[in-house]
Image (tube, rainbow, N blue to C red; front, side, top):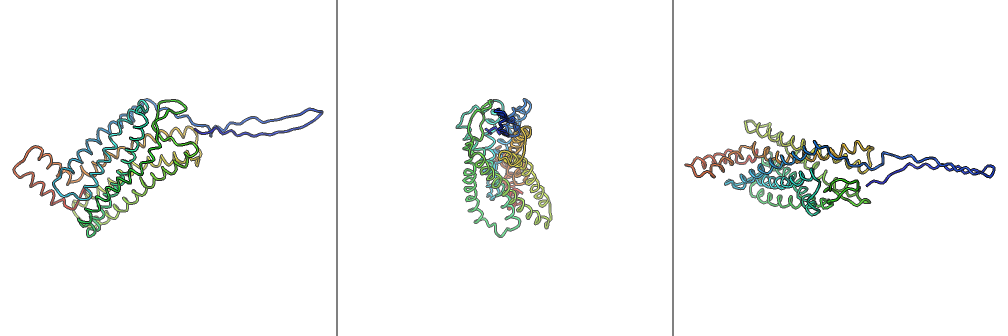
Length: 358
């Protein structure tokens, strides 16, 4: 809660004239720009839109990521590092999607699930955010090694490094998600439904917020973006020196990956940066701007969640290798056929070996 700031301008004029005293005090001038802005409730249309969006993402992300995980898990071929990273990516996105029904219900009725679930689900969501982005970085680095530096991507070294990388990323994602413990289930002093949100100590709120959000911007967006753009730029430059249909397919997937990452994540991080600058009082704003930023935070956060079901489409459904493995898995579930499935699987393995998801 912000403290009211009054521009108090005392002008004391103490005079004596004919044994009379004149005591003149100017009036208070209220600075409305420093008043605490009361949170404006969402309109019924916005509430319904956000709730439906969360449910739609849940219904798309859970089956999509589950299908990708099953295809990779039951694949009889040797898995490339990109396949391993994609499997862990689907786990991260699936965990994030499983939390969405709770946030959808909170949009309608406020947070009704208590303080423990507030912290726990926030931890799961934050860890999923970080690990999802970091596994995207691993895939981009692996694609770079396979296409640009194949001599440095020997199977023995890559097999050992991929498990170390996966363990490290899950540990790092869990560590980076610890600021979610600052979230509590509380009722705002201005009234309204119970919220599950950051609840810092007033005297240290600005410092903690700058630290946690700065960490998220750097490690959760800027640094991964720089690595992805660098790896994919060099990869595309190498692909341009080759010819063939596979080159054009790989370029389309690479461009789509970077574009989807920017489209889903950039609005959220830009909005959070604006919110941070306002809370730190580094920029001038009024209550109308404050309320618009609050609404933008909810909308852009939902847009970032869309990325959880875009990943299976970009990395798997567009990939020829995944489609071959999916067909082989479906045929296997229907029962053995006279060598057609095994021949198809071997053919797919031979034509896509080393290509990974691209």
